[in-house]
Length: 488
Image 1 (tube, rainbow, N blue to C red):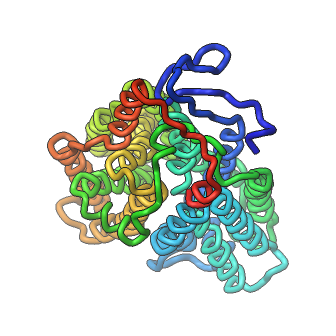
Image 2: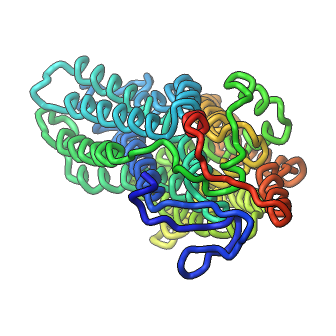
């Protein structure tokens, strides 16, 4: 593939000249324009899958009646089951995604992920056809499609760090990770805004409406796009590595040993907990907030979640740029955990009083934007920090462990919120105690980040050492051995 592409020549962690060539006489690494195609596959896959995950959260009543035909009456409603399927499947398929991505390569993982995503979207679309009169068949097909689509998470959630390491130079890795991860909240924004607009005048009890079919058909087309892009990815790796760490990285530890090495690393375990709190507290809170907001007189549909996702996307891009230029990974995490905790606590106290005017809605939107601004950047920066901490463990393995732990928390936290709300302790409005628990968990993450997060940047240490060594002795880094390419 490299022979037919215009190559940009770079040295690891150094500034490029205007013509793309670095004046480093000892070593030359190369990056290829095709890296943006590989990244685009991951981004659009994440966006499409996130939209399928969250799309029914703001339509709980409509979904309940269309797919089940009767109110929940205390049982788990259809939209919650659909959401939880994504978290449950992510935990149990994540290990397979890690293994395939690290051992079979980015190309194979991309094809599998996009295929599962489009097949799942197709089955969900079929479940929405009004000609299917049985609500049991509709709901069964919906959950089966969600299960298959959720399996795609095993690949796109571990691909960002792998793509960043294998295809991007050192000064672009963080932003590559950010672009991959912000596609997820972008999908969340679409998945909350689009149904809120489409179903504005929808009649709940109409089982013959084509509205759900039209909506799921649109998600099917969106899922098909990254699948087409994945077909154009020609190689699992670039012929020449983009950085010193990519050139030196070898998969000689073993899959099981790599996982154990991650878990036994105390600093990485702290990062796992921080990542899990950032991931689970944000999205479970945004889903849970619908009830308290309605109870206090707000009628916002899914717009707070959309605002949270959009603002978080923008701040993630800023955080990625700062991380690339400064390497201040842990400092960014610390600022984000403190900011998120403060935002949750302020929102909790603000919701003590009912809505009194339009200004109250604006304040809620601002606070929800702050939640996204401080939580979402922790996803890509946390993954990048995890790779640094566990190097030379392969990227998909370390990031996969983080994502699986986060998905496990995301599966558990909604049940914790529901249970604490059912206890009806201390307050007449039981949801207040559930929000108190969320605030307490956010304070735990603050303590962990400020006093216990002290990682060692192993990958950066290697690259800096190689740069110093190469000034004295030239090193050949181009991948000329086929077995090395196959190994990566």
